[in-house]
Amino acid sequence: MWQVSLILNKNLFMDTNQPAAQPVLAATSATPGIFGTKIPSSVAFVIGVLLFFMPFAEIKCSGTTFAHKSGLDIAMRKDWKAFSSGTMGKEGMGDMSSKANSQEKGNSWIYAIAALGLGVLGLLFSIANAKLGGRAALVAGILSAGALIGMMLDIKQEFNRQVANDMANKTQEGADTLGLNKLGNSLNDIKPTLVFTSWFYVAVIAFLAAAFFCYKRMQTAKL
Image (tube, rainbow, N blue to C red; front, side):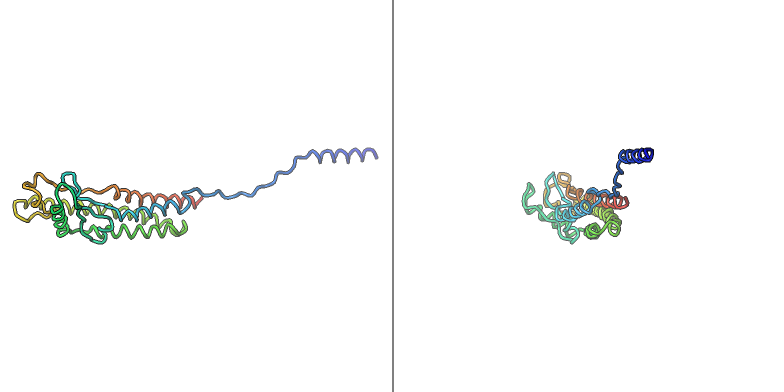
């Protein structure tokens, strides 16, 4: 009898000293970081589109800006906007910009429309979920930046062509396409230059950044 009691007490002692079973925690999915959301790409696309309202290109002479165009102006084929002040005078700057407008050719407006349209499409795609819109928004961002670069090259090519024609015909009255004969006695003293503003380059970077953020979002969605 005492042996049975000893065995029961031994088993009871062993049971009370058994380690408590650890609860099994269900694995929870990690919360995606900021790059896993639509916010970065959407903001970058919005910035790129809004920058079309800012001056993209300027024509300068002797360091003075006398005409400029915004990205939207280029897309809508609007005239160069002349400044009303400066060392050249309002009449001279207005005449130069009007000459530039009358002689302007090229396909820069097509590139500008493509860049703006692709930027808007990229924004719409970036708002969708990563699986459906991520890849399309990525491609739209890259193509939009490429269209802006194409626009810049086309405008520069056309501007250089006009300046070359201007210098070749500088001895003929009214032959210069930018109206330089109205501004001085010698074309060698005044040479117009075309520059693209920081707003233009920020727009290019914004669209490329949007494409990068779309890529990061797609990578996060696969995890």
